[in-house]
Image (tube, rainbow, N blue to C red):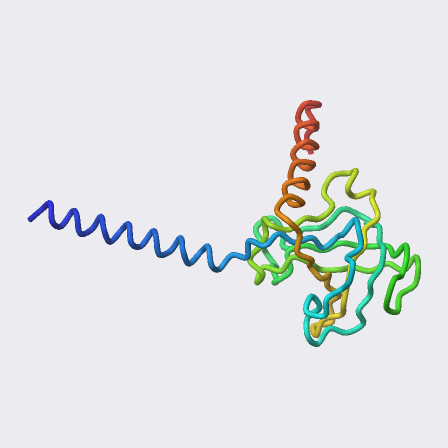
Length: 176
């Protein structure tokens, strides 16, 4: 009798863990995405730009300051936006913007469930480069960046660059 109860509770536990793991896997978007493209996309698919987007700008930009985490240490004041950046326009490819114009953009929304699958300039070398971005004005008045799907190989390349920078910092006993 005791063995039967133990077996029953074990099976229920295994079923609960398996079911919750499957739910988590389906809720999380595991498609790697980049908001900052070193090579401009061949063509911008209309389905990449959300419906209702206004004032779409395609531009080559440079970061004016490092990417910001929007949420505070303990996520006080958190919104759906995870990251933000101040960009300076270097070249306008489409849309109404001026060279030298500065924009504050939001990107990486929590509702996309892909926090660890997005790439953005992190290292000093990456932050010094110029990137092509597609931005739009959303219904809430915020300027957002459009994500573009990248390959797993491109994600791994970005992660390797980030890890190499981190190793170098630690080797030199760098502390923030």
